Image (cartoon, rainbow over all chains, first blue to last red; front, side):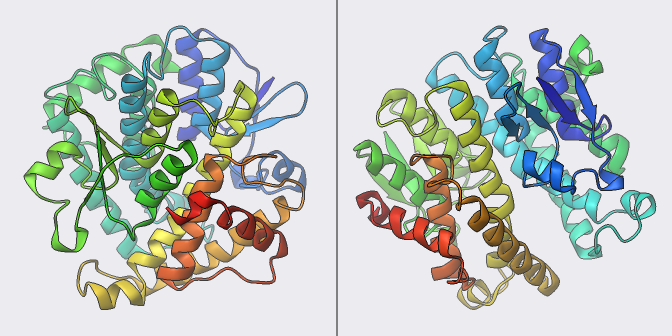
Length: 206
Length: 206
């Protein structure tokens, strides 16, 4: 088994943190997105979306999409449980993980694609729309405010214990702050408390 | 149990088709998005995202996000299986369902929000960006071409049998064609064959 990924990108980190929580090691292959290594015919056979991460099994079967990879790992290594122990808990974790993906990671991706850091790193890679950047920054700020409110009454993103939803949230908030240049408002105290707690776990270094 | 939804919207239809495949009936409550019924304090307690569908359980627990609802239904009613029978099949179905969500449903949503039909139905509901509409239409056309290529070598979206990924694809392609005004190219023969097959299932009328 091997993981096709790129260390600084946020989605591969989700899988690495998940593997660290499980205590599972999988060899990794770096895919240089900026050199177009994800658009070669060979890579597109592994994932027609041209995206990372991709988990390649020993028989050549490829699994793309971070959460599909993580759920596959959970099926092989059920403990510690990170997707929910019963139908209601699993539904709440999946709901919140998806809200983080669509309502935070989505706008962070838009801010990245339309923002100044990528424009400097890879000029012309995307046609940038300044209005889209402004809209995304407003969406991110609103979502952080909302999640800060929610974290007043529960300890973690998915409920009262650590789950895959916290891994999504950690990787996207760190990417937004450290790479996109759209930081959290430090006045959001519940969000800051949550971030300090999940950042202190050994898996956060993955 | 009751399902908060709106009949013409694509995401509630995903849940209705899923329920029809399972042979399960759940009473529904219409949420009038155009009258702001999804932004009331009462509704935001059920789902802080202000989105439909939401499945409300008898104890008041609310599950938002179509796929979280469908997976919960699958846990209560395992047959017919729609999420995969083993870890590899489940991973492939989840991967393809997510690619349909991010790479087809995402652009279709952008085309809807920035397109002429919504502008006429609900003037000023969203600030429209014409460039975003053009980019979304190009993304949709590329994705349809890609999926047509893939359907040359497998019968359904998720693999060789009907799954939740086909339900996502059916609801988004019908919404794009019938409501957004961005139809499939009828020359994509594999996609047309797939669409005819899934549309002929009794669940497609849900």
